[in-house]
Image (tube, rainbow, N blue to C red; front, top):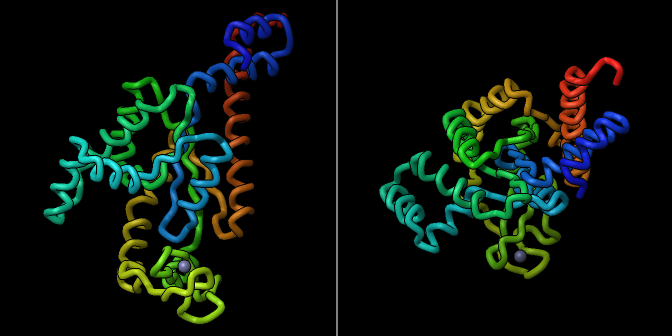
Length: 267
Ligand SMILES: [Zn+2]
C-alpha cells in the first residue's frame, strides 16, 4: 500500500495520474469503499451481494440477517425491534439505522461495506448519510440491479424450496428432475406462503413505488450505476465488477481535474 506522503511527493515529481493513484489508494486504504446494492425481490440481489463481497473483500451487511442476529442475541436494539414486531408493527427507522451504524463501527476501519436490503426509502437513505457522516464515512456507490417486473414475477412465482435444506428450484428456469422432489436430498418441494401471487405483487408494488425512488436520490449525488440484472449470474457479476472499477477510475479522473487546476501552469 502506497502512502499519502509518497503520493503527494510523486505528484510534484512524476506524472499526475500515477501520483493521484497513490493518493487514491491511500485514501481508500484508510476507508474501504461503501456500496449499496438495490434490487427487487427476485433480482438476484442476495446472490450477487454474496459474490461481490467475497471478490472485493467487503463486509456483506444484509439487513435481514442483522435483525435476526440482534434479536437472537437480545441486544438492546434487538429487544426494542422485537417488541414492535410482536405487535405486528414496522420497526422504526431509528432502530434500524442504529443497528446498521453500530455494525459498521465495529468493522476494521479499512473494510468497506456492501449494504443489501437497506436503505429502502428516501428518509432511510438520508438518515444513513447523516449517520455515516458522524463516523467520517459515506456511501461511495449505489448499484441498481435492473430486472423487468415481468421477469421478476416469473422468477418469484415459479420458486419452490425443499423442506429439508431450503434448496431453491424454479419451475420455469431450474426445475427439479422429479417434479415436487428435491434432487439433492429427496425431500418435498413447497412454495413459501409469501411467494404466492398476491403477496408477490404487493412486494413488487412497494419496490416499484418506493424503493425505486432511491435511484433519483443517489443519481443526484452522482453515485448511481445501473446494470442489467436480466442475464446469467456470472455475467451479472462481471458487469458489476466492471461498473465498480469504472466508477473508481472516474473518481480518480475527477480528482485529477481538480488537482491540476490548483497546480502551477508549468506543471
Ligand atoms: Zn433439498
